[in-house]
Image (cartoon, rainbow, N blue to C red; front, side, top):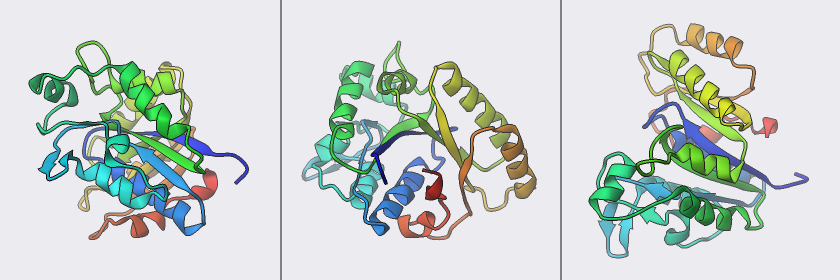
Length: 227
């Protein structure tokens, strides 16, 4: 690898497997002797631990990356209510802005790591306050985007709208990952081929429905050579 690579990981919706795909990429890096770091700047649905509120997704990222960082740097805004982040922040009396999140992300991005991932929350337009969304953070960071597409009924529309929004915001779509979250999805192959035909950016992974979707298994299905 000649130069560090850095991406913003987004999804077509919430619970589409963004974190698991991100961990698969981080695991690939580890297997190939590459250093890695990740940040999930804002997360809702956190659980109280002896060390404060922590988010399961952020903990998975910490476990998958090679650079050791304190939890507070990986997930600086950990919110307890399991609802939309901006509503959760309001409920706990916290003000969060796109510049704040961007500043925290830049601290991780500026570390000397071969691969760095910034993971959003939910989909592209998820609000972080009453006027800003995670898209504003991505635009400030100006990173190429990897979109995780949840392979289930409605995925084509969700994927095309998300990609259109990302491009209209002036960001490069580096590629997309098809993640089969619905094992019973009808016409999976036909839907996948439709997406490949309609999306000009490369598909860098097709992850099947896994009974144990751990980072090692997922890494097998990500075409990191594209990176």
